[in-house]
Image 1 (cartoon, one colour):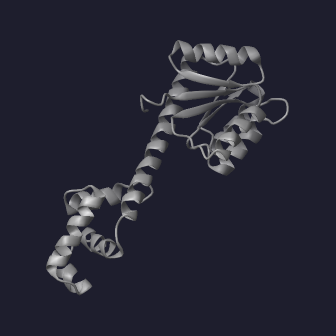
Image 2: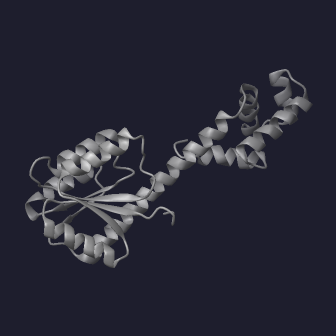
Image 3: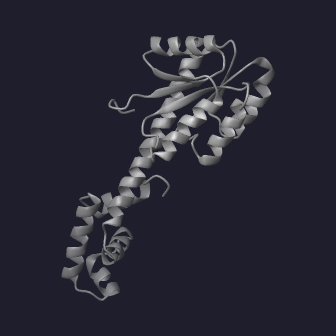
Length: 215
């Protein structure tokens, strides 16, 4: 997690005392939180961010009550999952004993975890930290994908062709033969590819492309 953008735990529960207790617990562990009294309020916040073109940029997770008046926690989770929000904001359900089977099913469908009420403070904080770590890893991978795409977007068509053959391990002479250009031209394109991709060798370039998230 980046120090300039502190992690945030969103709390969505219709019970005032539960929200206050969770916020106090997180403050005692130096974790920032924002509370919402209903799923509708939290959904409205997400919609407002989306309308302004804002994306989740700092690690976050959601502590979500299963049963609430109006939109249930499960309905909110389903909406977030459909939009792909749950990778950046992992969901930890807070459940009563009767809701455990439902929470287990939600975990199978992509929720991060669930904690049964009354929950252990230490266990809950451990799961929150794990969820925040998962969120941070996802956002970091997204940034890396964006940076790589930006660098690749700066390459000319010829530079892309040279890069592909360099990554395949071909020497300059064979690249020149395949592209019907001079070895000197290959050397120029190769140098430009390395410069634009911020690498110093063919091995480093191959490793960059191979290790890129989603590659």
